[in-house]
Image 1 (cartoon, rainbow, N blue to C red):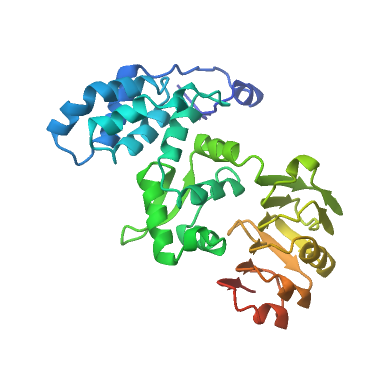
Image 2 (tube, rainbow, N blue to C red; image 1 turned 90 degrees about the vertical axis):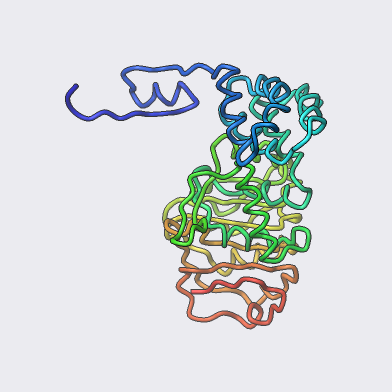
Length: 332
């Protein structure tokens, strides 16, 4: 075999076909035995063989619920790692969630793991839906996002515990660590991302803007609390956005896009409940040109986090500086 080869992996055959792939290999689902191997490796890490022997029969039945999907096996293993008795494992096996009619079968085992999360950690996972697929998370920044929304009175120490707990439950992947072994970057598996988007489909909205002065969110977005706006290269942030009365956070990204004072004034007027404003979401690829910040921004009494990094501003208005509730202010 001579020359170079490119291997493309995708869940959609249309993607492989569109890229002109010379040959397609459709991978089959894993056997129940292999699902059990993956599940047990995660569930019994650091546990003795006696415990494994006591729970294996129930575990093999749970593995059959994975429908041959490795991510389901891994996620369920992360859930069962914290269950030590036969009764606890039996509850998972007999759960009514397996009978739910959901968008994809893979969501059923993920729902098992999601509903087993402590109630204060669930919104932290769901909030990750506001980011695009393949987004590289920095845990320190993600925790600040969570804190800005005051999830269960979160402080930084709680945020680190919550993040590490979600890691232990196999929700994050592709970890990059520093010399001390601390996670500094990671991301969500595509299926996990689809799952949290499915659960937040009415609360978290993502739109793309291309040469648009006014952005109208349809009536179906009336419950939206969080909005992500992706702006075309060197385009302009919408002068006005309708239907944002209930908005709690707005994040935007784009290369060299322009944010005018007029657009900010309209945003402040229409979304008085904002807690977070992020204009450079993508650390490496996002750049915003902020012409001015109106002093009215001080009227956003709930605002906890604002980021104008790389905004080319010379000074900030007193309305921002006087905001005593701000936990995070990133300025040029």
